[in-house]
Length: 353
Image (cartoon, rainbow, N blue to C red; front, top):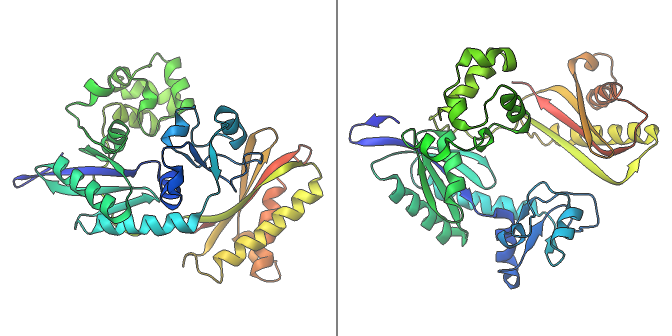
């Protein structure tokens, strides 16, 4: 942490509790205290995943990313509601404006979370004040993690839930996390866990004490040393208030029945390409030009592949910009296997840096 005069620099991570479900309960007060699941169009018989589950639903083993059908089996008494992005955007805007009223730099991470950079000698008092202000503005609870850096603050929030405040610092890092598996660290997933286990690293403490050079043969010269820094709780402490600029824009469709005819797949990709182009071009999602077109195919039962091509390769030959975009999408699709049933298709425009 950095010292500025009598003040210490802290990073706070503000995370709205069960955000989508909490917004829906505000709109439907009769659901308070009941298991609520938000996902897809709210029909658990269709192919879609859980976006958010209320704490009551989580008690039945339901979690984000789970297929709605699985969630319905685990919690047959749950109320299923469709995703309403406009409603969540509106509430999120109020939350972020409330955070900005602190005068601190705010780095927005999504609908329901943001980092706050603060110079204070009492971060807990600041956190409790922020939580109270968010509650007054929205009637929603939030949990707040406090750390020397973003990594620590993000992980601390998990210990603060629900509706609490928790501080995790370099001084307490190994006391809190040392005996936990490495995936307790934000940024380490199942594949990395497996590779670490293969070289005998099964705890945060063992990762923190590893020689960076020893991980280079497994993870490479950049990722290996970076993982050791994660094990030590090191991370970026600069909160960037620059407004979020999207890196890409796309559309995906999950089909309720697998698409087996590749001609239908081609037609759908062409349709999605035209739709995405119409959204990124005249409506100015971003002032940056599109650099690549990426196609995503999820084969049945659940195997996902993506391929992309530079848009510039097709602009000169095509009869207009929309044709160039569609041609690029179809060229990317040509790299896929055409003899397997498809359950999801997506097309994405990736903007130039």
